[in-house]
Image (cartoon, rainbow, N blue to C red; front, side, top):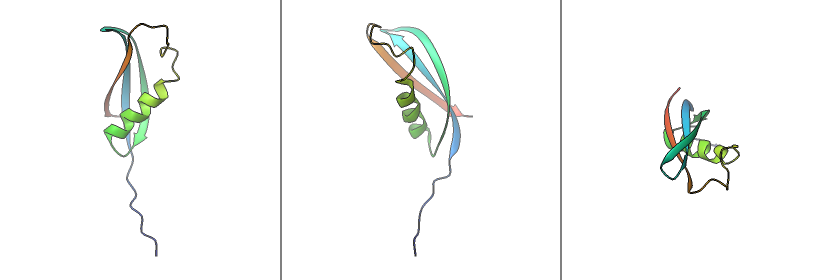
Length: 70
């Protein structure tokens, strides 16, 4: 017999903020279904790597993630 632990998924709103140094220059919002906030933020950060705002020409580029239940 197989037993599996299924994590119930929750919907999170994850805001990804794009910075050049300490200057905020863009924000994108993702809706992510994940078992917890940490995984939702990690998935959104990974997706934001395909964003037009994730540009190597931006000096001192960094991103932050903030999540809340959707």
